[in-house]
Image (tube, rainbow, N blue to C red):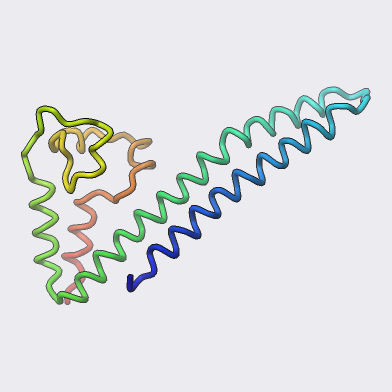
Length: 155
């Protein structure tokens, strides 16, 4: 509430949707506007078509990456705000360590319900195997980085 997270995320989601909407609008203008012209240079039309298709594919992905990056940054801000409120960042760091080191692995965990859990229901091993794409599309920053930032606060 203090950091206006809901307002910022609502704006970032709206901007991501706006980027996709504008890309689709430009694509429709190009497809329907330039498609009927009788041109001697078909290479320019082909280049425009390829660029339009690439932008249609990439714009939602880039918008989502930006939105998730904002979400990860806000997690750091939430951690620092909690540390300032409690005046005990070491306690918050220890709580994050307990969540990280929870060795409980659910036998019947459902992949679609995994985001609803506080810690990973598949165990800590899956966290260590994240590649660059998984890190890019993650909603939360790595717990180790959060713990290091909390411990460096010095409140």
